[in-house]
Image (tube, rainbow, N blue to C red; front, side, top):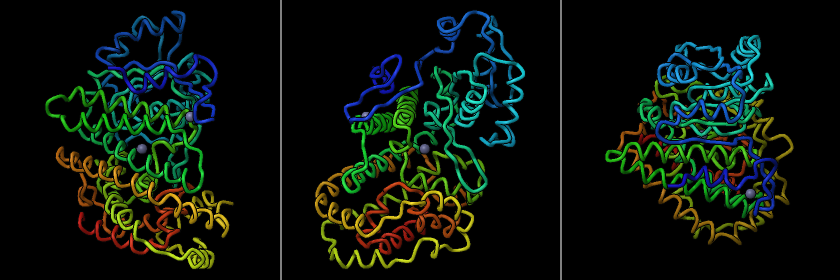
Length: 458
Ligand SMILES: [Zn+2]
Ligand SMILES: [Zn+2]
């Protein structure tokens, strides 16, 4: 079976940029991805393809990923020159400026030709930043199908009250060995699947934004990301009979998702309001159970909540009546978001300022959007109907394999869970269903539905 990520990589010329059918130009720094059985054993030959024998490698892992794969990698690379750093497993490593700075000094003293990350999303992100700082390439060995960040061109830096997506050095060569990935803890597998749930919503929101705000969309990239997620969800449904196939399909979809973000230089193909919510929960330290404080799990939980609100809203959109001029008057007279902040979200004011900046829509922008909503109403209803039905099926399939969908699993309380829902628009300058809901005047109703939903899963 041909992997989705391979079909995507094959479109790109070896050097330079792809002139895409969407009218844009995209570039990828990732050159090669190996996914399959025993691909770690191929490392020496892949190294020889790219480097002379005296290449100096700096290997980064943590105590968990050391056992999962790094020890094995070091055995396989015993004929090569390398130095390595193993971070402690506890506290869990974070992609912070302090850790990156410290590792840049350690790795820098060794003067490596290449950084090799062996680990999950955090180790991979840290290594991409060290690689950028030292101006040497980085490769990666995946230890879990837990996130889609491995193949993205960015790293998610954890600042005090916000995530900062920083440009990083894209990973040139990626090894995804099924023997290793299959052994990853179940919770990391579920995290990867949870992150994929977002594909239905991010595809829907991107398409809707293209119709309403005329935002640029790369149809090919968007479609492939959705299709790969669909394939992975199908594989997950038959998990008990074919775990390896599910892990392979999931990893394929996650790798493609990362490549799509790298090519578009934006997380648009993979992330919409559900990610804004998950990031907020994480940064506001609302999750009381550290074992489940994983990006993909939080994304999956927020998708299941949004499903209820979006489902009702889009079902009723056909009959939703509003007077355009009246809506414009109301939208123009609204207080600014800064006046509506409650103390609990105060720490996010700076982030919101950065996001909103100059981007507050004026009356004319609202007029165009409302006209476009009228014009494309049928298309939007058809699109949301089929995608939300698929998402519903996916959520049900994940319930069957014990994905944590209750707030109590996370020790997340109701008010905290609801907190970001009121501030989706200022928290991120990216058009989502929340904007559409706000523009047609259905925000209060949808927030009520979301509240009922959150209460029902407490
Ligand atoms: Zn994600
Ligand atoms: Zn394109």
